[in-house]
Length: 89
Image (cartoon, rainbow, N blue to C red; front, side, top):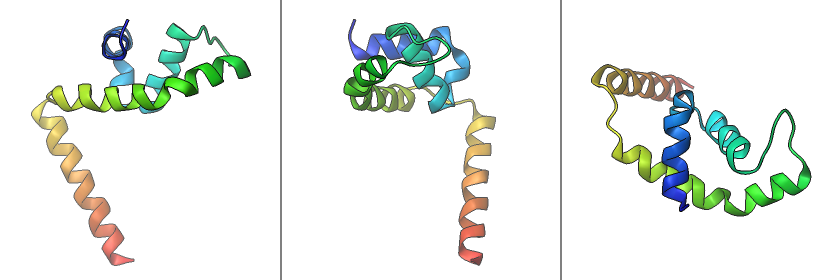
């Protein structure tokens, strides 16, 4: 299985992982590295070897997915609020 197939499988099986990177990585480790409640050092090291490629593939897949208009609008609204708050400081 290539990285793209793995990423799409995780996003389909765990829809809550779509907007939460931590949830996505945990779901990935559960599926492909047999992590359960805890992670062994060997499991983490195996995961970490491929993490950069998985992250890059996830960003590419998410760019292709279109967000619903209300979610997109809310995302830009929050970004503007953060920007204005940062300028005040």
